[in-house]
Length: 214
Ligand SMILES: [Zn+2]
Image (cartoon, rainbow, N blue to C red; front, side, top):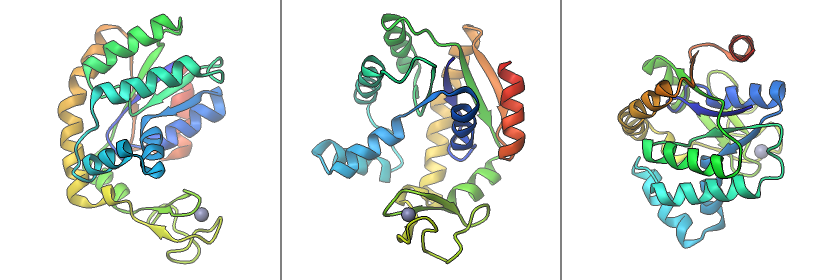
């Protein structure tokens, strides 16, 4: 199964990705992770990306498409299927993706769209903390660390990503809304869109997604 994950920041795409990996053995292709890797490398490209993200803006279509095409062409781990997370963000990218997948003979099965209440999204996002050392995720509401500010797994320091503050999040949500509506229409016209409730917690989500994809 090959799917695209759609949903605003904080709707629970991370949880959904976990369910799809565990129950359907899908490989997780996250453009966010690929971009963060570039930032971590400290390359010129990485610095450029960091500036854009801090402003709440998006990285250019061409650049992300190139990363995705590379990943899909080289991917030996994609036989059981995969999920794309963070891509496409525009109709142009959706069209490019169709081309890439057609060439690789791996056409898309579904686009899963998660919607959630905006107040809930803000609460979820501003509470997020990340381990500086191992990348483990915590949440002040849902998954607080045993000791405040310290990673349970490795003892590393927890921090709030610079793109997790309220102003940046609101900007990201707005950008998301405007750019995603046409993508939802694109997949609706292909009869590939499936809707999931992003207000659900992880266990309900597992049941919901299993029922939906059966
Ligand atoms: Zn850690």
